[in-house]
Image (cartoon, rainbow, N blue to C red):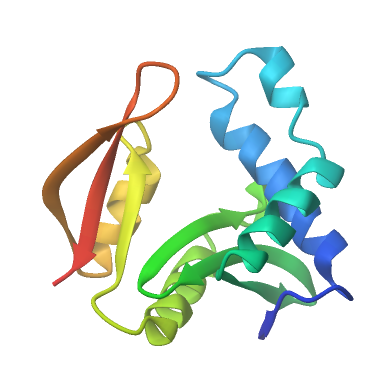
Length: 146
């Protein structure tokens, strides 16, 4: 079941974001920077994004396991708990997010995110050739559903 993130389930969404973000960024961010991403901080991040027009959604499979956000046609913040990855949760969330997009679904991934690249290509997204600089000397690559 996929539900909107609201004040009543914000803590669950923030916990997913915190745990998953830390795990996915551990190999290229400093330990100090990783530890800044507490559930409390991620809760503020989610609330700020909602205030600025993003809608967050959470996948619940007996327990909350993943989140995704959509702002117009931009899909962001796809995070699935590490022990739930590889079970189709990310696919369910992206397919749901696609349905919430008002125009061509678009997203950006870090160039070193091989798992995300495979997922998005499998779901029909294509690289557009647009690249922008990110932190840690990495770049982000734009994908669109074509």
